[in-house]
Length: 258
Image 1 (cartoon, helix red, strand yellow):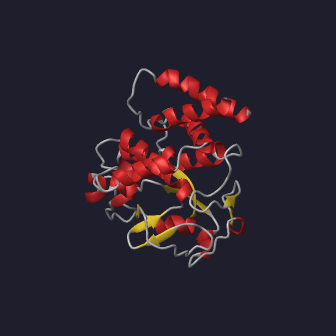
Image 2 (cartoon, helix red, strand yellow):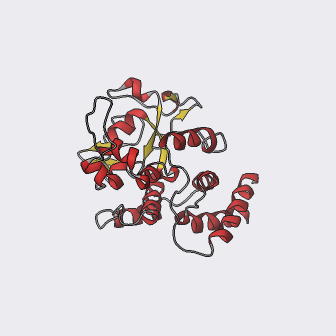
Image 3 (cartoon, helix red, strand yellow):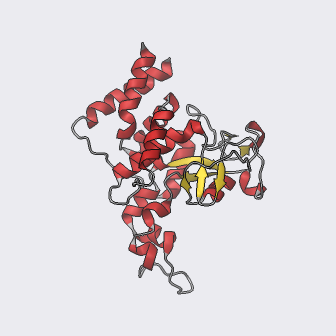
């Protein structure tokens, strides 16, 4: 109950601060992906939010070592990478970076030590200020088993027929160009996409192909208390509140208070 009041109090203050505008504010303070990862590990997922991987629900410690037995995870190929947590972009970096000129063509500053020019994500990270802020936005970053993060890469989320389990008891499947998450996190994924689409318009993060699916996921897997607490903790660091979650969290916590 004390936790509910803590979240409710934070959200009430935030509600008054954002009542002047209905426009989602983007990340404007955390410019380093490395710093974002440190903030998440040391401050956001520091005990009040359980240290569990997003896709598989495996416990992990402050040093990002994964307890695979805690979730029945079985590594299909990369055992070394499966033992550590990596910070996954739910909306892949390529979704908002691949059409940037630095990603596609490079930049005069993107030259390695041997004088060879480079492009892609590394160049965008080095030279494009908006991309730096977008890839460091903590609302879009979740802890994932490294192997799962690598296998998912920048595949779209979606539904796959059948329940082939390549990762033991972990309810996560990949087939072709689609990655299917467990039902209990589909709403979280949908709302992260909604936030990123609203905070960074013009990138087509939500489109005609995925809009209806995310709307359905948002309804079938409603916001829960841990999602609200995570949002509240990120807002303290990043400075912009997730307006997609605000209305759901205030309703949820009002009901908990009754």
